[in-house]
Length: 498
Ligand SMILES: [Zn+2]
Image 1 (cartoon, protein in one colour):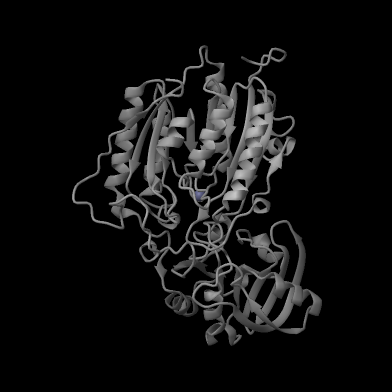
Image 2: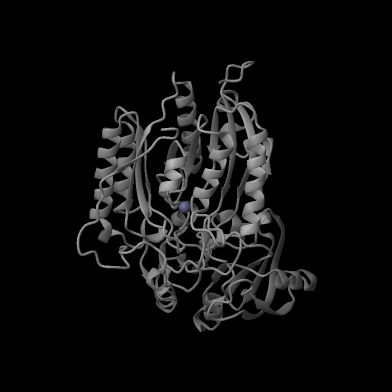
């Protein structure tokens, strides 16, 4: 039932998007999710802004969409409050044809096991079986049977780093409009295969094999006749829930084709499991510093990966900073080193009130996650203060010998050269740049003459086996040995209303 006046389908948008580690004591609150409502929801997507072709392809009903920087789990009461608002918004939206469920897929809610499955079931209940629901997810999201069963159309990113994030969200919407415009609105068959592997994102980057060629198969499968979409959800490693594992799905008009292609792709993922390796040479922080300082490659980047806020770390584990401050080779002044970054709101206030050029004694980090070290004691000179970054709010650079440490009021990952330049730092001219992220995002990757991944402690420790998962499905690669291959035949998920 299209809107009688316009003839266009009436499509609601709702969802909550965050990747959250259950190994981090941090919490993602409603304010962190920054819920958008009304036209702010639409304007957030470049392809739905006023004047864009898709904006006029439907009558949009923007309900509520929240998106947080990855972090800790969402408290139950925060989740229930936002869920209730989404539910109320959908119940008051009349005569919907479609719903875009914009989720990441790795939201953990305290006390729940499958938050997205629950959210999907809730919205389905609100809109009824006739409404077609489509979702475009992060490939680090999880697809439980419940989620697969509740949503009609599912797709996910095909690149890590996620350079195709927006394209994927758009594809989810175009898939939905395609179905809504097809006479009879036939729901596609859904073939679902869980693959018992659980790997950190830093081992599954599509820049390197085997993810590169596995993900390259996805568009080829999508291009087959009768296939609507295909995806490899590699899954999220830092939550301890039964749903956390890889999933392959293929959707399309022919169930046999979807099942065959999903089975083949899942078997290929499984067959190549032992080839997944870190995207850069990995070692202890000590070894990374020794290698970086001895190297002639400049700038030499080191990823402080265990507390990477873009994967769900609290971002304020100060263990690495404590170690850096004890390294003569970094603070003697012989080398120029940059550490980006650590949230330390009180220390930032102190620096702002004391001013540039003043020597300050600070306690830094360990606000929500003390890690193995507790806060770092940092005595240095306030070198630069910048107000106004929308994420960090206030950024301060404190210099200790040759080491320039970026402190932020709010948690912020540093991905761009401009993030450094605005703080008076020139990463291209530095000797060593240590960033609290995992794999280097494109600009830093291009800039790095060499790069190592330091296996540091935190809520997203890359050494999964030392985290102590106890609730994931077993056996699971690489946690366990499989005595025989798992059953990787696709299961056909019932279509809604069937
Ligand atoms: Zn991701």
